[in-house]
Amino acid sequence: MASDPYQSFGRIKPDKRRAVSPEEGLARIGDGPLADGFLPFGKGLSYGDSCHNDAGQLIDMGQADRILSFDTQTGLLDAEAGVDLQAIIAQCGPHGWFLPVTPGTRFVTLGGAIANDVHGKNHHRRGTFGAHVESLTIARSDSGIREISARKEAELFHATIGGMGLTGVILSARLRMMPVRSLDVVQTITPFDTIGDYLAMAEEADAKNEYAVAWIDQLASGAKQGRGVLLAANHAESGSKGDAAPGQARLSVPFQPPINVLNRPFLKLFNGAYRFSQIRKAGAPIRTSWQSYFYPLDSVRNWNRLYGPKGLYQHQSVVPYETAADALPALLDAAQKEQAGSFLTVLKRFGEMGRAGLIGFARPGYTLTLDFPNQGERTRRLMDRLDAITVAAGGAVNPYKDARMSPRTFKAGFPDWAKLEAMRDPCLISDYWRRTAIVLKQDG
Ligand SMILES: Cc1cc2nc3c(=O)[nH]c(=O)nc-3n(C[C@H](O)[C@H](O)[C@H](O)COP(=O)(O)OP(=O)(O)OC[C@H]3O[C@@H](n4cnc5c(N)ncnc54)[C@H](O)[C@@H]3O)c2cc1C
Image 1 (cartoon, protein in one colour):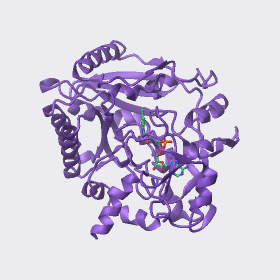
Image 2 (cartoon, helix red, strand yellow):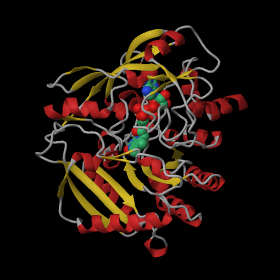
Image 3 (cartoon, helix red, strand yellow):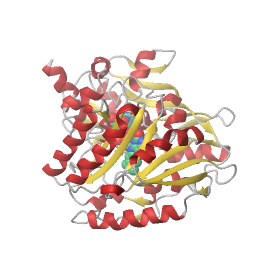
Image 4 (tube, protein in one colour):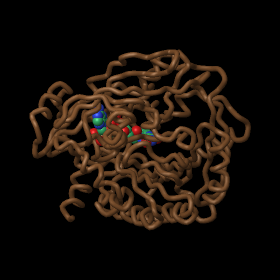
């Protein structure tokens, strides 16, 4: 979880924040619109300011975290929005059910996963998280508490999935879980030398596997640029059902070092060692625990502190299939020209299903994720360059990983933003929304 209360994962603005309880938040939004508004907050595992409302007030939805019911026959789960994915796995895994879609950390809340319509390594098979939500109970300042679904107030339901907390406070949700024989996976590792080689095999890997994601050695340049490993997997026929203690992280970064530890020399060593260790395992299918395949970073608590006091920026772009072969190397080139080292560089093919909500990040294409230590103006210049390449390729930059994109970049990737603004609860707003959509609205 985020290391300090109410920070976001990137820790770019480490202000001290406070939040009201769900009871107080609901009572106060019921009093009618407030200039500075409220925003539901999950666990702050978004990277930037889409989970912040510094001019107004946060509502700590993580406090409402009960599982209400689980039907072991149908896999239907009813839970309050603040329950985290780890608790859901602990409840459902032993009965042979897993999350149909999971992001790379199991500490996010159910409400946060729905509000950002998150994606996982199986987007090509299952779409986004919101595609598995049967119904929601939400509270709005202008119309109170109600249940919504694809059959009842469908427009509001679809706007709330991926609605970034703006169309109502999600109180609880009904989620359809996925049947599995085991949570563990059988993984096949395939090295590749260039982005072109990856693109040539990504679609087939998707067709054959439930999960597929690639790691890129972002510091490799010249003829080695774009080399990496493709990690494809399917659930094993037997193995863990998540019934062992769900577990807290075994390791922790106990304090924030005064400088960024994840610097270029460290990354060179890390990337070399990681690549070597993966290539040694390449070829034959190997059984891998669900914790290490889905959530490798969860084993070190507060690892984002390693970026030092200035925090990190993440840049996640998605570009259409047609432009990926040019745009992906251009994105890597831009980072290399700035000598910027990315600790985690992940490449994934999204399937045709796109998003489940009115607006959302996932769409057919390839998504590249880069993490950079915050070096001030220099890093922001690079991020602007990455935005420009993405937009020119017809793509989009992920809002819930962002802390600085321009209104123009947002509009280019999310042309339907005004429809969401029209459905926004007048009492709910975020810092991200203020500096993008509200600026666009004011500019007419
Ligand atoms: C290590 C790591 C790996 C990640 N991997 C992935 C990945 O693979 N795929 C992916 O898509 N994302 C990924 N993410 C991002 C993360 O999954 C999302 O940002 C997620 O939405 C965070 O959930 P949260 O509970 O922390 O919510 P927060 O970050 O606190 O809030 C997220 C949004 O949800 C809204 N919200 C929260 N609770 C409610 C509620 N009850 N009602 C209405 N709105 C609400 C907030 O207002 C905000 O807009 C990753 C993040 C980390 C740190």
